[in-house]
Amino acid sequence: MSPSFELKAPDRFTAGTVGPLGERVFYLQAREGGALVTLKLEKEQVSALGEYLASMLAKLPAAGPAPGDPSLLEPIAPAWAVRSLGVGYDEARDRFVIVAEELVEEEGEGREREPAAARFHVSRAQARAFVERARALLAAGRPACPVCGRPVNPGGHVCPRGNGHGRD
Image (cartoon, rainbow, N blue to C red; front, side):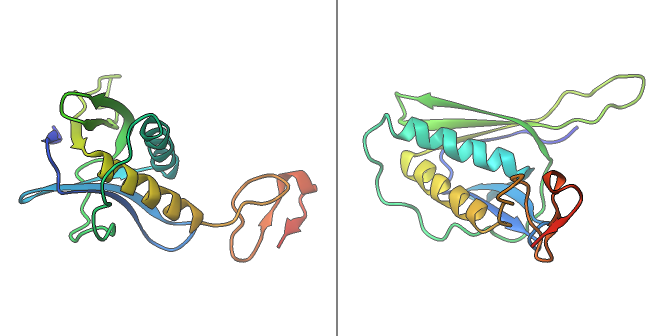
């Protein structure tokens, strides 16, 4: 069974990547005291979380100053991969509650074990910094093909709308 986590007042909450363009692995990372939690995510999950937090932040008063350096801390060793993300807002504590649930593989005969979960209670300033970081990570990726919208590798790509012809 994978470990579950609850960080009620993390001093760090960020996303980051490891690897070259087209092969990047995305991570969510939080730290509270001596506990460093790293989870593996998909690019689309980082994007969706960032944009959802942005829409929620737009309905709240401005946040304080953004935390410092948003890069990932070493060691980058994910506890598990994320299947789903949920977001809530704890008005009494003025914190977003981000809940990640583990992606669990079937164990045979169609059985699954109970997934682990992680809860991160982050401030509005941390949420705003996450939005900025997520947008920067996505903007730094491969450009989209203007015809099909799929990512274009440095050497071009075969566009499905171009009848098998490559695009540079």
